[in-house]
Image (cartoon, rainbow, N blue to C red; front, side, top):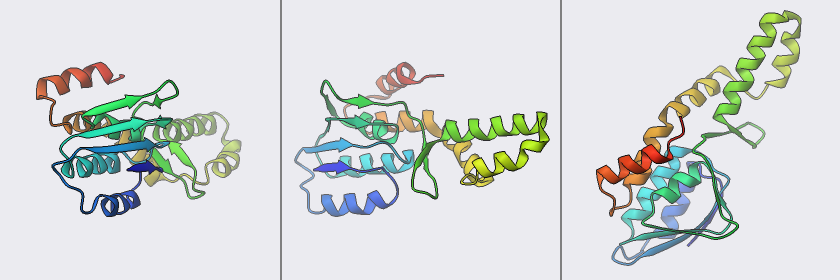
Length: 178
């Protein structure tokens, strides 16, 4: 099957519809290309895929960023080519205008605006207008998502049935960037 999309909650139903009727005794190959999305959704998708097959192989011809990387790490077999690109597990949020923004970028932008406003209160309106798509709830969700990233990495690695707990911990320690 081919999955080319951002990974958000709406992906789960579509993915299940595609997997419906699959023989769980056969292998499943997924060609994945994604700029990322929601890490929790990526975990749901890879668990979903693993439940419908004997072994999961993921092929990344282009990119699988952030949440896509989580999906890839949950596979039993991974195929990458010379143009393939995985990215850091960097939670993404969809802004009201449809664009994706990294959790780290949202937090950094708000913190920088706060610093600038403290030193130059007259810039308040300028910063409010520049951050019009960001609200306090989104900032807190971004912080929560970053705090959850290490656990998501471990969960994704554990999805492959061939991995033992010790191997998951070793892989997670190697892949985790402080």
